[in-house]
Length: 446
Image 1: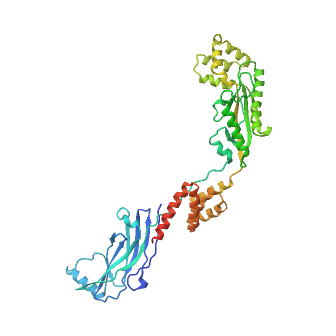
Image 2: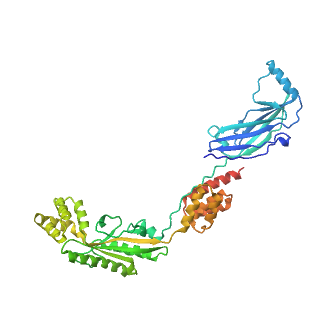
Image 3: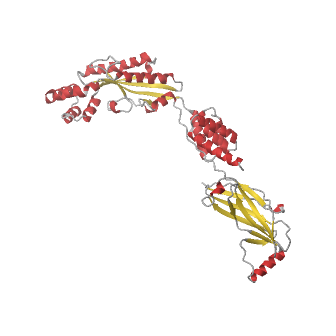
């Protein structure tokens, strides 16, 4: 990015105000500067004399950079010097030589690597002058041309603000059981609940639908379900849309009985939540998942038992569920079934609390702030400022509003918003405040 900063300064060289030049300073990428100015001798020094002018850049620490001299010669002085040079008795010109009254233009490129002090503070441009004749040299008063100072460029630091999704959106970050309603999925028996991220599962004793807080690890899970539901129900910016509960039973026993058991388990979990968080029946989607054959098959596939492949073959190829169970029980004299009861089937006696789906009030302020931030990145500062002023009560707008105000010339108001935003922890505002303070300090030292 090329930063061009032009400073116009009146020169005080000589008496001819009509000849007073301007100084143009262009800072390029903070690594180089181009300096351009014009000198013209306005003193009445006489036809026999010349004025030697040496432009000098100086700072307050004693650093000095002398530029090529300019010599302004009277008519007879010019003829005299030319004749002497013809005969070789006078050295060749070391800088610009012009007739008195004519201008001399300078254009100089300087690098920060060679002259770092030019970037460190106020720099004066002065002209050291002497009046020279054929036999004498007379010092003249030093003429100040102007001064300049490097002002670091302000490069706004901006970031889009997150959409305020209410308490539900905040909770979702740490509780993947929560999902926005747009991600709702109805249950079908191809889904493997135990592997779905965020699924909360509670367990039941064998052949029971009584939901016990102290059974296995039910306590923390039930407390979490209730806490999440209560927090969302109490929030004004988000709402519970669907509480999806999947009731399951293990494959032990007749299919008809197990299906009824799975339905009662789903209802037991619904009643547990409703008893602690007042919620209407319409929020609940209680699904009877029946016997957990999908869960069982997946868990067998993950086990490294000696009956793994035989069990999977029976599950995949025996369509009748009751006969499928009998074949599994008879496998290897009952050894395979004993293994399943000890290691697998106990995990199928559960009700999968799959999801809480939520919705929230649209965050129009975030949309406005982010649209204005996009305009700031396009340097459309006035448009962005008008948009941001409509949401200035929202702390998320303060950094962007500070940028818009700063870039449109209202520095005092901008600094106020940067400080407020930095005060609530906005890292971008802290950096913008640092840059703005550096610029203002540089301007104040001019």
